[in-house]
Image (tube, rainbow, N blue to C red; front, side):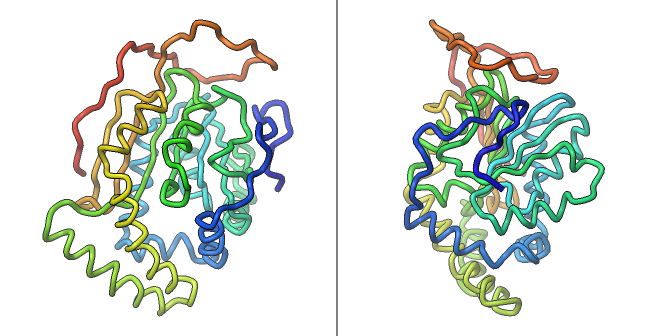
Length: 294
């Protein structure tokens, strides 16, 4: 599939700066996921003790899709979140974007022959340079992305760019449990248990098992949760909610794009896109809400 969609109804446009050369971090991510799609759904659930599907459902619940919405699912992978979005709102339309051709192939296989397959479009592209017009989606979901990008604040700004004012965004990331006993168990599992279990399946999953623990811990050393809140605020997102799940092993963040009106709205270069039944909810302040646990 091309890196940009071409039909007028998609709201897609060519990348504004051209396709960037993959950085070392992105090349590592592409290589890491190349051999995973065949059993990705099953093993991602099993290796998380069946918490990953629960977290994904919470992610979709946080963005609360509605019939008529147009939703962008970034880092769609094999389409698990996209399928949940269509299940929650049978009348919505979903665009799933991923940089991995292999993962997108798994997503195509998931939706082939399904009744709801006509309501999803799969696009190969990068979250740092989305091939879509500004404010062309009612909602956006993103899963396990920020550890694989070089500039999380800039990536969050790019994600927010394509959401209409008042639209919702939600993300799912792995977390490090804050409670000391749970954190000790998490460290043992990611250092010993996860690599060992991955080796039982394949070399590819063994590599994932060795990679995840240091990757997650290192990310939060560089970008603590409070700093992530600041990144979301700087991207124009408000009413930020943070929900720690499974003792903190999964973190769902959600927010609404500010509804402030700009001084000089840009002229539309194409007919306005349908935005479903959501009405923008203007707000004049940036707010965060207390952290939730689930």
